[in-house]
Picture (tube, one colour):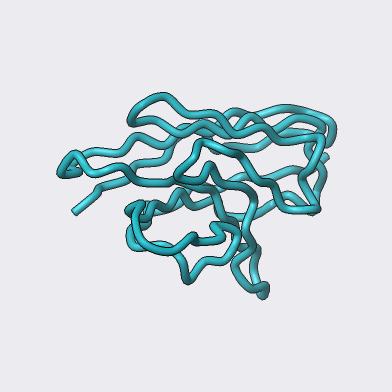
Amino acid sequence: QVQLAESGGGSVQPGGSLRLSCVASGYTGSRYSMGWLRQAPGNKREGVGFIDCEDVPTYGDSVKGRFTISRTKDTLYLQMNNLKPEDTAVYYCAAYYCGGYYRYGLNDYEYDYWGQGTQVTVSS
């Protein structure tokens, strides 16, 4: 089992920045991939970005050039710059174990473990 705990959400004005963190614990030592997804009210969950099992980052089209994902061994970060009102959502950290077939981490069904989510609100 992998436990994930997000932090860093909050309220910010358009054009502002926030940094989210996600700490993973409880893993067995197997390598795992981690990503960020978000869900706004009334919308489907959307992939923001992930770092795959080869440590390659991939971003959703709506955040390219504004958001940056990085990772230490057990912590995943999401640096969000030039935030827009449409970025308002609950942001979730998620993880899946590496091995076997390639998983495209912008799809929420690829993940085995989820955090509780942290709210990000962008409003003037």
